[in-house]
Length: 407
Image (cartoon, rainbow, N blue to C red; front, side, top):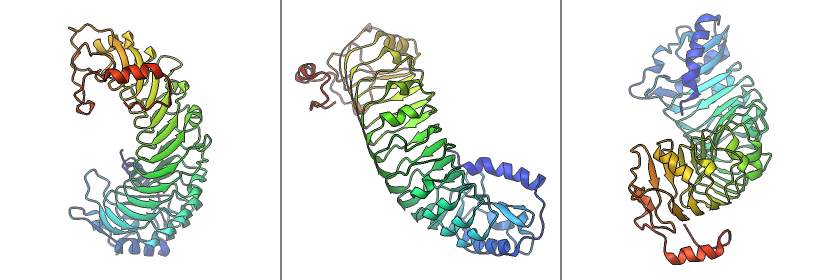
């Protein structure tokens, strides 16, 4: 993910040189910048602070943007890719920059807690301190930032809950808290402007209520957490989604067929406890669909034929692989078709056919002898067909969600 400050800094550079009129900096802002400077240093190879000479005008410092005598944006560190970044801690004096609207820090080795004083920045719209080593809780007082639009604290070492006061912020459009150690349940988000919610790689848990997320969401990633319970009613509402990743959780229940009609470019549901048949309402045009390692059963829908990368493996699908999927694979219209570790009984394919180099097909460990030998992933194992006794038992219990046969 490209940090937001990469896009923000060029814009502020234009504004700084085109519109803002510099005066003598407000003494409170001047002292705050001095305190911030004392708490931070350049990592070896960085010279970001070279221009921070307090005998000159601070509004000309790198990363400092002023309007009149007030600092309105502070971008700490060299934003160029590969910059070593900064080390130290964030001084609470940041909260004294009363007109600050944007505050970002480039990736580095900044440690310690996020200052509670940030809650004093009533005009703050953008807060981005990602890819550092921040620790401790997310201050609940950030819920006082009624103008906040983007909150990016990703790739740190933050712990504790996501404060419910943050979910109540009315102007939020981007919340990016991935790759931390956050726990507990997620708060309901009320902002109808929220388009991106990224909470992956945390220790979050609990169930998601149908009204806990706004229908404005376009990007939702909750993977690598410990969420439980059904999501079918929630997903039915999120019809603006173009990216959905719920993988590696403990979600249960069925998946609504209407989900496959949403404008998704990527659907990741793998490694959960989802069950039931998969019944798309119309032709699926999502480029990548991964519903592997669940408990889905029934026949594979031919409506998946336009998917480019289709992962159905390690479920409980039965019947034949639809001929239209095979045709698409052989014409290189489909790049990946993984159906291994199911209870499929057949596939219409010529044993002498050559699979296109650009395509991958894996059939092993089903209730059939694979007619073609294909390069399956190593984790699929070496056994070509499922033991006959499992296939017989499954046939007698087909569709029974309580069976004990594993994929």
